[in-house]
Image (tube, rainbow, N blue to C red; front, side, top):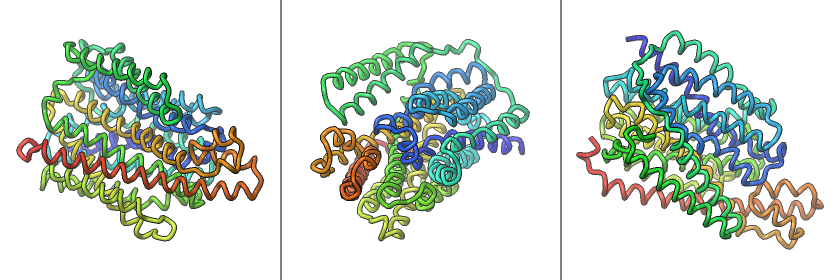
Length: 493
């Protein structure tokens, strides 16, 4: 009996660095822009390539888990993740850091389905499993939430590479414990690992994201070509999965309405959580002049709310069910985003913290409800496949949260900037896409023009942030109405 709680501790600890790495770079954006001279697109790729790669990799890694057992998958993933952290810590260029983040995604994609399968196989009682899932969600959402604080604290005293080096001692300790404590599992040697389908899925996702990023900067025929190609590959991938005996993703699980709804909720809640963090970390540093550590501390109430939510949300789910927790959570998140859009972080700090707490608590409660819907509805023998679907939704939301919020912020920023008359056309083309790129060229301008441009850039970014929060709130409201109509109480039980 005691052994299952040791296994839970191992699962939570090995998952923690994976979730932290999804957001730890958010407060490091100004530092990375200065050290590596990043463009806005490079900055977005460095952050979201980690999650976008995992969307495609989690599925074959789930199949690999069935073939070799989730213990071996966890050990292999942990080793790759530790090695990749070392490569990332000593990257000397944007491309090298992007490559390191791809390697990190390989290791993380093994760890996520392994941890969820471990929970499903270790905790057979549903109430105990919901409690264990609550702790797992604390590690996931809490790690993603505390990522900026961890990054800010390290950047205050050390080189930016330290935000990756801290993974290594955690991974080493957990791997040793897992080797001796986690039991071996039955394996399916006949399980097929479909590399071709993996490449199809990853290609589809990356082509669509590339088209979106290109369209925000300059819309031309290549955007339509990449977007169309990505959609066609994605359509072909889905059709191919339906016909295969051993598909990369078990689409039969989507026959359950709870799985479909849970998948959608997971994506949108993670978009809201990660996208909000991305923009507020930049606003606090670029606009309000906070240091990375000060920015992380300002977001602390949000982080605490996310972390504590997992403990209370499991009780709410057991009492009211996943449907009502999802509806209530999405509604309060939408209201919180509107409140944050109307808050001045400099003069209304307590109001900002109130809305952050509400957003953090309920976005995590909603995510736990969606996770419970997916895992508990799926048959025990398909625990790994269900874990892969849940992990895919989580990472898709994380990756698209960065891409969508980042691109929308860039778009609204570029149409609101008013400093074109104060610099050359060439300089304006370099500066108009993001406040980070604007700051990069200020050193080449005289002091008077530089101060004026910086003030205009701050105003443009504040407007962009506000517009993005309003759009995000509207999206969550539409999702809430859809769930209320589409998902009945009986089906949610």
